[in-house]
Length: 227
Image (cartoon, rainbow, N blue to C red; front, side, top):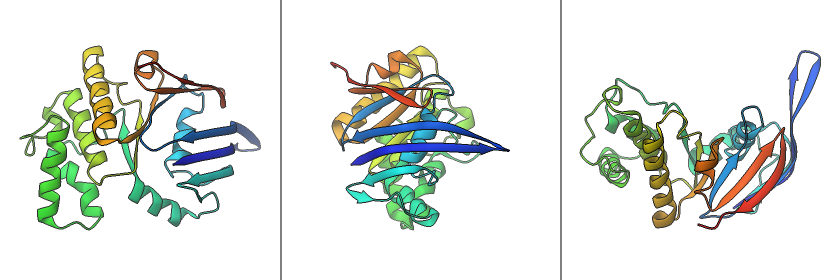
């Protein structure tokens, strides 16, 4: 599904150039639950920005479903991103004063879906994440774990080909973190959703079937867990 070959990334700051990713080679198959683990500043966020079609300024080759996309322009990447990727963030990125249903409906509105179809799909995904009946709640009145469930519902509303979850448990307590991880594992197992989960937490990573370790911009390990 995703194949990166010899990916390098540089940032320019004034007269200085920083080499952030070094010759990354990575394959991710459809249906996998993969953790990318590394400390802050290791390059893992830069890597997922490339994987998720957010960054088109890199060196190397990127094949998505065997299609070479490394020479695509920004507009092409935007189209790929909108049609294929769902994002889940540490700080939820919800509109706190707008209802849960309206938050989840946003990507469906952007996709041009009809109102009746949107209402049905919103109810469906909220039920899937354990929030049936929460359509009219406001995120600002919900717990962190519930808000993260809303953000997951929003991410899967358009049936994306894969999810990128960037530190999705980072702002949650231990018990709530485990509940969110259980939800990711359930989505992966029952819906065969491909999930790329970025974390610095070994306990989160060990629950994924595969762990890719990034250190100082280098991919130093790619291991499978016995789950």
